[in-house]
Amino acid sequence: MELRRVVVTGIGTINPIGNNIEEYFRNLELGTTGAAPITNFDASNFKVRFACEVKNYDWSQYFDRKEVRKYDRFAQFALIAAREAVEDAAFGDDVNRRRCGVVWSSGVGGIETYFQECMDYAKGGELPRFSPFFVPRMIADLAAGHIAMKYGFMGPNYSVTSACASSNHAIIDAVNLIRLGKAEVIVTGGAEAPIIQAGVGGFSSMQALSTRNDDPEHASRPFDKERDGFVIGEGAGALVLEEYEHAVRRGAKIYCEVAGGGMSADAYHITAPHPEGEGAILSMEEALRDAGIEASAVDYINVHGTSTPLGDVAEIKALRSVFGSRLSQVSISSTKSMTGHLLGAAAAIEALACIMALTRGIIPPTINVENLDPEVGADLDLTLGVARKREVNVALSNTFGFGGHNSTVIFRRLAE
Image (cartoon, rainbow, N blue to C red; front, top):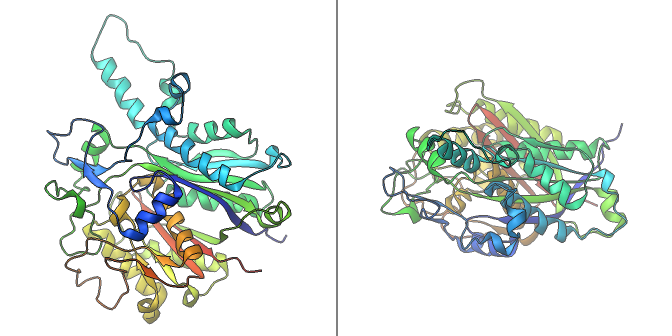
């Protein structure tokens, strides 16, 4: 059977450097950091006291008090990003909701709800009491469920969890469902809200987070010799994916085409990447094969680039293996230097950065690199410090997760 083409017709976000798409794109271009001291809880006694939080967030601007009781913070972010994307896609009454679905992602789901309920239980009392909203607020699949209920989308509906690779996996699943004719429209992306005591404390105890408390604005520094871990972030990104002919028939605005995706496993370690990037190589090669694109056609790579000592070097080794000598001609950037690491939502907002590069010809920068790690190599175009104009026809986005999960998605300008 002939596979259907898949395009992006709507986008939305709320994240540490933008509470909507236009604000996000503007701050990406400006090289704005989202890192600052934690306000979500009192972190004064924690080893790590800063993060990339969503700024000026007030749930009452989006939900009424009765409604918000049903939503953990991660689900709130999911609904906000999805609403912007669905409104951007501008569906009419003629869209068949039975052929519209939601494939969403989150690495840790409602961890805030889980933590708070456990803390309340630990306070004691004669009878243990739990909120009737405890389980529905906590479980990761409810973001997809809430989005479907909001818009009456009755097609495929589920959540993907694969640590920091989650939202690329969700995008790939959504693409394949449309390719195979299982749906005509799917809202996909990811949401995360891990900036609570358990989230920050847990990642800190693994020595995964930067401890640059005296200078949080410069803590996320991918490829810098002095990098010491990632900066944890929160938020959501959403994409409306649509079968190409369906989008054309209804006169939809089309941002780009999702050309293909690749997935693999390191099969190596619970948290560390394969030192030679073997799984990452396989993921990128599979994505290129799936898209029918040669490595030489890629103009921009949004790297995983978390600012961890092991991960950044392993990814560069993988890129050199896949792209060879041409890698020096490809624009590369790590937007996590600005947004921090949104875990299961990271790939979703990085997909949006790729769409910005494709549609606006702007390569977002990698900020905070003051002393380039010699293991990375000075021959690469890492878009250091300042955004750059460039025509981009093909963009590749990598995300890798604990457990050795690797995922790669390729976007391209629409070919008629």
